[in-house]
Length: 79
Image 1 (cartoon, rainbow, N blue to C red):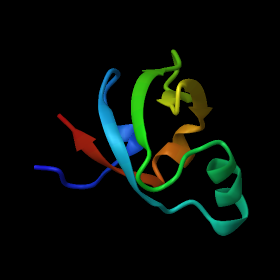
Image 2: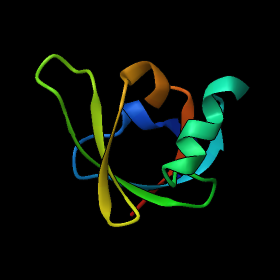
Image 3: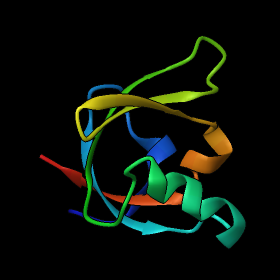
Image 4: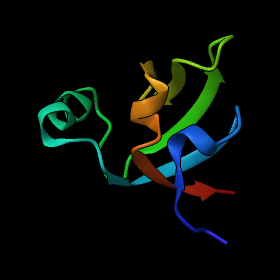
């Protein structure tokens, strides 16, 4: 039941663990610097009114990602 899904496919309030980051290399370091690493627990907080950006809770702070970036982060849903 813990199949991989995109971060953008989660519903608000859902928790997951980052399993894979498919973001192009030139943009990946920015995500890593913000604490979005493989194995990191995340919680999807909400989508902006028009669906972009996506707000996440990562390592005790809120992080916003563009929806196209969130679609390239694969997660394992928890619970």
